[in-house]
Length: 155
Image 1 (tube, rainbow, N blue to C red):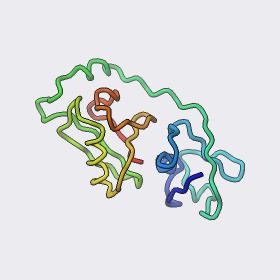
Image 2 (image 1 turned 120 degrees about the vertical axis):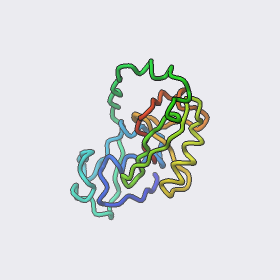
Image 3 (image 1 turned 90 degrees about the vertical axis):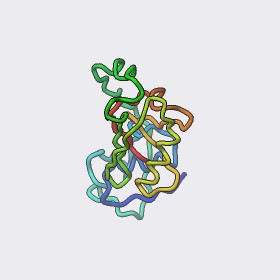
Image 4 (image 1 turned 180 degrees about the vertical axis):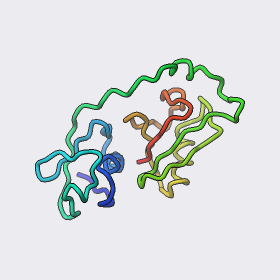
């Protein structure tokens, strides 16, 4: 059991990201259940009839395979510093706001990105999620398969 603060106007998909702070389950594999039915990712919690007084249940389903972009292997072999000042990634916070972090390289530590994302989103500690997988602090962008221009979610 864990407790998570989620706004009722948040989508179920955004709620799943928030729930990763309480469990180590891949949000792509999460199924959120309320009153015996699975909630759809694109609906808001409020539209699903959630009023905040009841418990939501998390069930594990299967994660969808991430799409494989053409040229991904080539992009991972790019030089760490490009002519325009390095890589950039988009960070989407819990409220849906997006921030761009620039000047990154293949060897940029995930821990450094977590600190920057926490500052941008006004959070304490956070997790970064890429293609439905929580990134480990000890890894680097390149080791996690993050490419220039990818979107990371904050949880």
